[in-house]
Image (cartoon, rainbow, N blue to C red; front, side, top):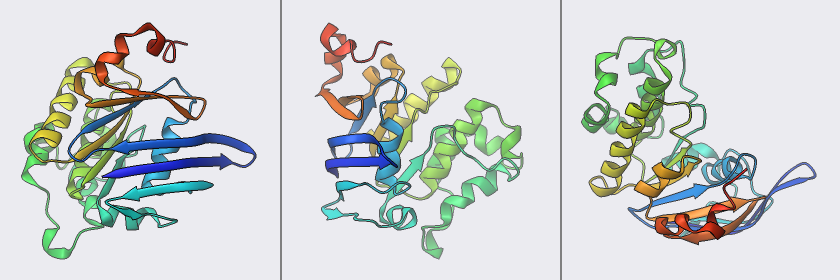
Length: 231
């Protein structure tokens, strides 16, 4: 579904992505691991259109994105759950979810029932302001908001960061459902090794802006692979 070819990205004179190649298969979970500062978030921002590549291609369902804007990629079926969640703190839970209507045709502008099936707490708090929710509840809200847009590809940037274990399990169950039942392709950035190992169909490791390993989750038990993840 998604293919990245020889992606390079600069912030001024600093190069943060170096010849990155990546493929995310349809209805599979692809996990990108790596230490802080190796370019994972920059790669995700390039995919969703928040940061243009210096060179290289991002191909989605056989068509190159080029320099298309983030809203055009959203309309094509790409949804993003950014690191830090970035919900609207003064809007209610319902209003936050309804911001996902933006790329949809008018007839499709309703909240899918599976959002509340996956995250029942959101249904109980529809009239609460987003800023009043706990960190874990805000993360569920951010994922729910992305699902409202009916994505084909869901990009998740460190969804377990700062979240209590019980909600991490809920998020893991939701991601499995989206792959196995809804058929959504998942691109997941993580530092939580066990979470990635339990969920992923394919694992990539980044170091200094490059993909240094690609393989199955079982490969993460190898010492030569783990050395790229230790500080």
